[in-house]
Length: 378
Image (tube, rainbow, N blue to C red; front, side):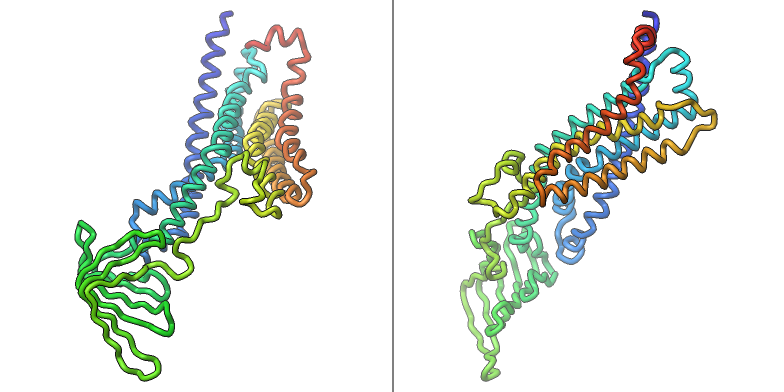
């Protein structure tokens, strides 16, 4: 009874170290991955004039997917590093000498694993599909409504390869002054349009610009003469022909679990049904892998005889084992698309290594009834 308060402090001490390290490592890796992946969108800011706020909103929607993928791996890394440090500082040795069993020493790591599994399910089943859908919808909106973002005063804005727009001044109410449009989308009628004022309009077919008090200049390709047409009002579409008003097709990454497990033949290609079902099972398997990775790390540190100068063999074997499990998971994902009979093996790969490691680490303590009565609660 006298050891209970001390055990509670040990649990809190280990759990706090693991949690802080997990947040730091996961946050650092997510930031690194976000930085590398967001580079492909920098062109929208540098060359297209997209605002930095829009860039952050667009790339920020990728973060939940990054967290879901790396969280099981960072759990393994954190448990391995923290417990190896505790072993190197002889803290685990002191705990063992005080009667703290391997079960008690592993409890904080298992609590971290349970927490990570819960967060993983919340990510893969809810947050990641929603963020993926929001990302693709926002990206589609930018590509098809790009003029609303890009038109800046004093800048020749290239809306597409054949459409360039210049605006001398843009008022706060959206009124445009001194407009030049070089429109080469129709190869037979390449035209240059000038207008004193104008404004952007939204339409079901995409953004359009209403021009007032201007002229349209066009060179006749047969005679080489300049044709000039003046107008009071004229409307020009700023979307490419064939792309305006198109319907965005949903990706598997933004579909819900039920949609993937029970595909609708009216909205999905039957050839993708196996791939969709495998995607659904991957969302269920990925968080479960955290348990096996954490157990591999615990076996590498807590199992076996104590060595005064430590050992690099067991951590190395643990790393190789986790790398092998990750590679096996990727192989099973690919095989399951072609042969759905391999889908149960995805769950076996995710859970069985953890159960084997738990039996190896905790089995002797749990089977030793006298030892459990004395040390199991310490």
